[in-house]
Length: 389
Image (tube, rainbow, N blue to C red; front, side, top):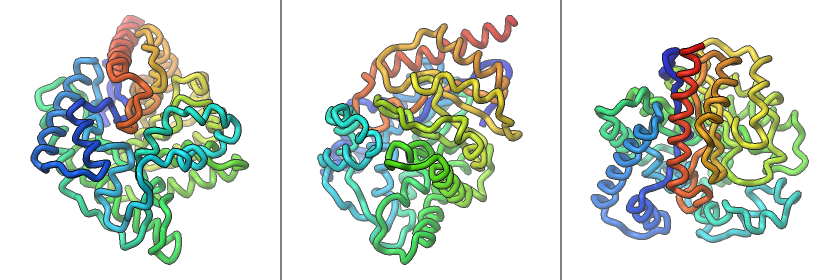
C-alpha cells in the first residue's frame, strides 16, 4: 500500500454505482438469463474504464474497478467457486428481513418492513455447499485485473485495489458436504487464497471484505461481547491462514457494519473490538468513522498502540445518506484522525460501499459521485492545512 506524507491519500470501499449498460448485463446474468460472452466482457471493460476515470476526476487517489463485474460484494462466489448450488430464488424478502439482521429486526420490526436493503438482499440467491470446493473461474479474476490496469494506465492514481470476500462470509453458507466445520473452513480458505494471491501478485492491493467482523451483534439476538470477540477472533484466524503467503502490505481488510441506512444501535463499539481487529495480517484496516453511530470513535485511536506498518482508513464520508458532505467537514474529520494517527498511517475513506448490491439504490448514483468529489476535495483541503501548519 502506498503511503504519503506529502498529501492525504483517499480511497473508498470498492462498490460504486454500476453504469447503465453494466447493470443491464449483470441483471441478465444474476437472473439466470443468457447473454453473449463477448457482449458481457466488452460492456464490463467499458464500465470499468468509465468508473476509474470518474474516480480520478473526483480526486480519489487510491482507485479500483468499482466492482463493475459483480452483482454484489459476495454474490460472485457462486459463479467462481466449485462446490456450491443455489438454494433459493430471488425475491424472498421475508427470509431476508427475519434472518439477515434478526437482532435489530426484533427491536424495530416496523422499520424493517420497509428496510431499503430488503429488495437488494432478496436479489441474492442463497446457496449451499454440496461438493468439494475449488476455484473454478480463474479467468474472471484475471479479467478484473486486466480491466483495472488498462483503465488506470496513464491516469494520476497513487495506487490500485481490488475487492474479494472474506473466508468467513463464505463458510457461513450452509454445508452438506464436508464432515465437520474445520474441514469446511479450511477448504474455503484454500480456495480463496488463490484469488487473494493472484491479485497481490499483479501488484494490486487486495481488499478483503469482512462483514463477519462487524455484524454479529446485529444478526444474533442475545450475543454477548465476549462471544462476539470470540467469533471475530476465529474469523480472523481463518483470514490469516488464507493470506499466510501474501505480503501484509499488499492487503487491507474492510470491517463492514456501515452499509445500510438502519438503526445500527447493535453495532459493536470500536473500543471493544479494535485489539482483535489489529491481529489481522493485512496492514490496511478500513473502519466506519463518519455515520452518526460511530463518528465520535476517532478518539479511540488516542489510546491504541498501532502495530508497525499498519495503515488505518476510517470513513470520513457516510455511505448511507444522500447528504453530500461539505469538503470542509471532510477536511475537519481527516485532521482529527491525522492528529492521533499521523498522516503517514492514514488514508481518508468511506464508511462502506456506495453500491454494495447492484439492485439497491440507497444512495443515488450521481449523489454517490458527488460524495466522492467531496472526499477528494476534502483531502486536498486537509493537505493544504497540514502543509501550512
